[in-house]
Image (cartoon, rainbow, N blue to C red; front, top):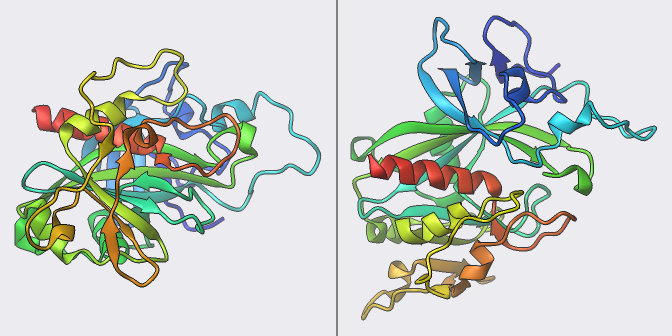
Length: 306
């Protein structure tokens, strides 16, 4: 089996690919989140539903209502339809980067990526073996956006954990990827304008980026995927996320920009309806905000409220 990344306290072996991490921690049939004790170790995440030596945080853990892993043991699989047996659950980290004027950065994954194409997510990715979790998040931020944060101009806190599968629904096919995503809130002392001026997105991974303020983020976070009764949305939402025209260097002040084939960027008018889409029952690659990102935005708003 590959190097352990996500483990349960008291067990030397990593969680197997087909196991529901939320289920192992006693999650019931509800939507969660479930408080989880975490040991944030170099290249590893150790979890438990109760305190243990080495636990450094108690974080909310959640999964989407349509997470495939709880259902896999209850549904017979067709011959030849097997899950990976030589892999555990991988650990990923995502950076919710907050500017000093209280906006957060999201990036749109390119259409050509094999996993979660065309989704809006915070910068993030796999944690390397023996890599500190914050270092992994800052590395992914740099690789995707070109941003390097001066050490003395930010602080960070862990926000929460998300159990992620791709494909995200059994109706899309058996899962090929299984992650626990650790969302880190990184609070910069620099403004959105200062950060945006240094961004150089990686066109192989990122096709657009945007900065969300609390009002729009709250509306996006309220559109929970997989629930029958959507939350009440504010009536005064703008129809689009628009760029903010400024007399000089207009691109630097955009709320959303899209990469061009020549390496430049242009203002992006992003319809609010796109941001409020939910995960469809059948596979498609329509642009939308990922379910895990909505969870992370809710946690960010709770942190702002403190």
